[in-house]
Length: 225
Image (cartoon, rainbow, N blue to C red):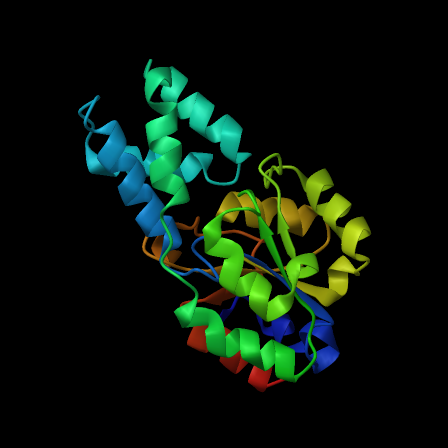
C-alpha cells in the first residue's frame, strides 16, 4: 500500500471511510480487466492483425467510457461493425470472479461499512450475480450509459445513494476514472493490476490519494483504521 503523501495518514479523520464505492472489472473482479482485454484481442485479431501492446493501449483508453459507445467506437474505427454480436457475446461471458476481494467484502459487511459497486456493465450480466447475493441489488450500480470520465456522473451517483464524497473511498483501476472521481470530491484509491500498472502513472499526479497493489493492501488499510 502506498500513501501518496504524509497527510493521507489522516484521511477520514484517522478512522474508516463512511462508505466505499468500488469498480467491478479489474477491481472487485480483480482479473477481469486482463481477461476482457484478452477476449477482445482474440476476436479483433482474427479480422485485423494488431500488435498486442498497441491494442492494450487502445483498450485501456476505452475502459472508462460507456460500454456501448466503447464497443461501437472500437469496431467502427476498424470497419468491423458486423462482428459486434460476436464481440459482445465474448465479453459478456468473461468473468474471473471475486475470489481475490471476497475477504475485503466480508470485512465491510462485518464492520457495517456500506460497500457499493459502480460499473459501466449491464446489471443483468451473470458476472454480477455473486456480488448481488452478497450485498443486495441496491448496492450494485451497473449502467451501460455511465461515463467514468464525467465528474457529473459521479455526482449523480452521490445523489442516488445519498452519500458524502469526502467521506467515501472510491476504488478503481483506471486513472482516468479516478481523476473524474477526484474532481467530484471523492477520496480516490487506485487498485493496480496487470493492465493498469503503478509504473504507468505519471511521475506527478494529485488525483490518486492511495495506491493498492492488491486486495491485501486494501484490507490492511481498513484494518488499521
